[in-house]
Length: 612
Image (cartoon, rainbow, N blue to C red; front, side, top):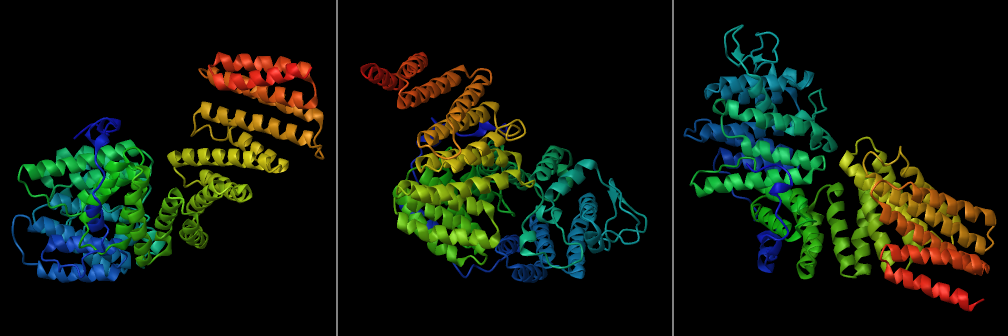
């Protein structure tokens, strides 16, 4: 396995950096609807695939039906891989049964799973599985107690009873085996909130557990795996690794997530080269390609597009609209990032058509926003409004602020490109409000919070500028104050570098000085001449509070402030003082090598001299 982190990422100058884009013919094949009806599963492994596909497509009762039918068919099946394949089908059936609910059915599914492990000679794994199921609270305790020897007494952390063993008889379970089995447990079961045996609500079914918890559990499982590998039925490493990658993606560590996904693909390729079978019961290969399509979308977009196409081609017989359309959305984003206009246009057209097949509106917002972004990049602004407003409506109905934020951002972009500053101002204020709310939400991860705080600061900065352009002084000052509040020590400092916060704070205070000066020049009510100097001094003090090592940036702001001050003095007719300040600004620009800025100030100085 390769080292975690950036060492596993493709370098910009390597083969991946010069990779040719996907062929349009391959793209057409990948974007076709699935080949339906899907072939009937012919063995336990293909039946397990079908059950998991149906679960992800939220066809829960069909998933249980397929599992029950094929469990009966394979009950007498023998062979070197049959026990492992049946285990995968039993796991899928347990998850499908839990999604529907019903204590009796869940108890039977759990008992069959543990019993299968015991009958195949994996008694320690059976005991560990029963122990882990019992850890999920009263509801699971009722389902599993009969499977874990109902009369054997309480189950301890280090041991559990296997079904059918004598009263009081126990199978020792090592901590390492427990760690591996906990990692193999579906995140959806670890994240269960229903304790009454009823069906989970749609919003709960696929929420899973906290990705930070998943990182810890799966990391421990992979560390423990070598010590207990011989006690397990099947090789769980690919599944554990891809789940760990997904957990790292969930906490925002995209470099580690990418590295782990690449490890999964590399391991499977090595087995294929060696001529060994790669059963891949949980579609770890497809999951790895899908993850890489997301994590490489901005840094290596062409490579990300290839991974998305590979994942889509592996789903030719899978009827899973949420997964398929999610992959096409990632593909479109990668194609746009790579500047592949023709590919992106074709993909956007197919995506707009396919997203209508989704049953839940909450799944439609991301593809609609991606299509809107593609049409904006193609300067088809009227066509962009249709999917954009559809996504905005879904965001309001679902109370999805992330959707609302992205819709407002795209709408602001349209207004900016078409010269509608008032429309842009409205949308930018919405972007800032949504980013502020999400950044302060306790459920937001630290990595996402940093991006949201930065988005809020950038939006407020644009609000300030657009408000000044429209001579809306009160709104400009309000935006500057919002930036000042967010960039104080108790604002964004835990998740953004100090120099970033300082730069935004100085930008806001300099902007406030300019806004107040302009208002004073227009003789607006409530603005006095003394206010202008006070705001200038506040900006100057903020510049002096620069973080260590940012002297050049501080000199930039000082020169910019002096230039704007000189222009203000010149407008007032105070030419002598304006010349003095302008000379200081000119020296400041020259000191940092800003020749064009220095020439502009030199012209101001020349004009002041001619006006004497």
